[in-house]
Amino acid sequence: MEVWPSLWQHWQAKSIVNAVAFAPKRGLVAAGLESGEIQLWNIETGQQEGWSLTGHDDRVTSVAFSPDGALLASGSDDKSIRLWDVQSQTAIGVPLIGHDNWVTSVAFSLDGALLASGSAIGVPLTGHDEEVTSVAFSPDGALLASGSDDKTIRLWDVQSQTAIGVPLTGHDNWVTSVAFPLDGALLASASN
Image (cartoon, one colour):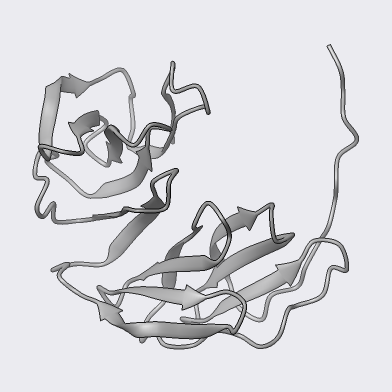
């Protein structure tokens, strides 16, 4: 077993940080803030890159970089999703709307062609009894996993947009995170 040196950086955001995402190809960390802003931090210098991204009317609850690091998606309690051009640090188009409740999770597919989001109300993929807290695509983009406050995980066929099998159970509390490894052979989940 090899042990790699850890990188320890501490950044002082100007508000409570609700979500973070890492863009290794760009050397950036994005932080979604309680204030509704997003800050980009350079992991080499420890300095904020440019200015804070603004456009949400409520706290930012989730952030995700596209696989190439060129785009950043953000979800908010204002029920919207925004796409950002990372290089210019500007919003792309208008906010994506359609959620009837706050957006709790955003995730890009590995090829960057799809963006999934989770919310308290499941539209169009309805299958959880409570809020969806986390979403993740399988590496091949064929499956979407969703974790929920109902203590279950669902697997979805992306192409047909239908649930696969029965909900996965085993958590004693709400599911906070789901993730696939690069080979897609397993699914990891976390709970409170």
